[in-house]
Amino acid sequence: MIKNLSPSRASQFKTCPKQFKFSNVDKLKEPTNEVQAKGTTVHQALEDLFDLPKEERNTEKLHNLFRDAWTKVRGTDEHHNLFSSVDEEREWGVDGLKLLNNYMSIEDPTSFDPLERERWVRGSIDDLNLRGILDRMDRNQKGELIIVDYKSGKAPMAKYKEPRFFALKLYAMLIKDELGEMPAELKLIYLKNSTIHTLKITEQDLIDAKNEIIEIWENIKKAYENNDFPAVKNNLCDWCYYKPICPVFNKNAPSTEELRVINETISDLQEEVEALDMFKDDKDIPKESPIGSKDRNEIQNKIGELENQKNEIQSEIEKLLREQASS
Image 1 (tube, rainbow, N blue to C red):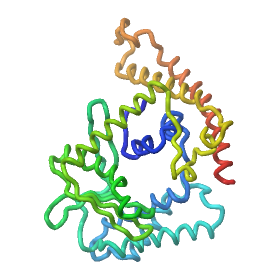
Image 2: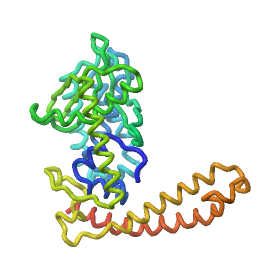
Image 3: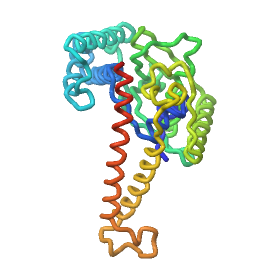
Image 4: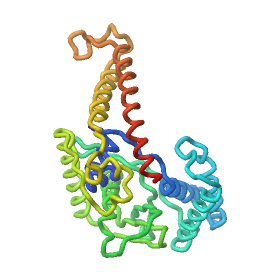
C-alpha cells in the first residue's frame, strides 16, 4: 500500500486503476520519453529564468537556460540514448525553444517576481498523506495568492477546462491549510498553443476537491484490499506505455501478479528493518515485541533475493513494453 498520494497519482487512478497498478503496485516504471524530457527541461528553464534580474529575462537568455538544463541531464541514465540521431535531438530542441517562445508571447517575466517556485506542499486528511510540487506561486496586484502550473501540451477547449484544475485545487487546499490564506485564483499556462486558463476559486471549490480526493483515496484502499484494479478504456489509451500488457488490448497479456506479491513482501520486510534500525543495539529490542526474534541480516538477505526475482520478471515484461513502444 502506498504511503503518500500526489495529485498526479490520484488523477492516474481516477483515469485508469489498471495503469495505476502497473506503475505504483507492480512498479513497472515508464522510461523517460522525448515528450517528458522536453517538458522537464522547459520547466527547468522557466524556473531558472526568475533567478535572473528582471532586465535579463528575455528570449535569448531563456533559450540559453533551456540548453544549459538539457546539457546537465542529457548524459544521465534516464536520458541516455533518448534520440537515435543528432538531427532528431536537434529537432526536439527546436520544438522546446518554440514552447519557450510561446511562453514569452503570453506572459512578461520582467513585470513581476514570483512569490515562490517549485514549492513542496504536503498535508494530511485523516489517514491520507497528500503531497506534491507547485510550479509557481504569485501575488496579483491586490496581494492575493495565485497558484500557477506550466503545461507543455495543448490547452483543451475552454468548456472542458475545469477538470484540468483538479490538481491545483488540491494544492490550493494544502496552501490554505499551511499558510492560513485562501488562494484567489488558479492559472494553467499551456505552452503548445500559447493559452492561459484561469479559474477563480471559493471555499466551496476546496471543500469539493477535498471530498473528491477522499473518495479517490477510499477507492484506492479498496482496490489494494481486494486486489482489484480494473482497466478503464479511455481516449488516452493510445498514448499509454502499458497498453501492450493491458488485458483490454491484449488477451494474452503477461500476468504481473507475482510482481505485486514480491513488492508487497519487500515493503513489509523493509518496515521490519526500519523498526530494527530504531534500536542502536539489538540487545535493546524487547524479546516480546513482533521484531524481537528477527535477524537483521536474514531480512536483508531475503530482500536481496526478492529484488533479484523482481528484476528478472520486470526485465522480461519491460522488454515486451519497449519492443511494442518502438514498433
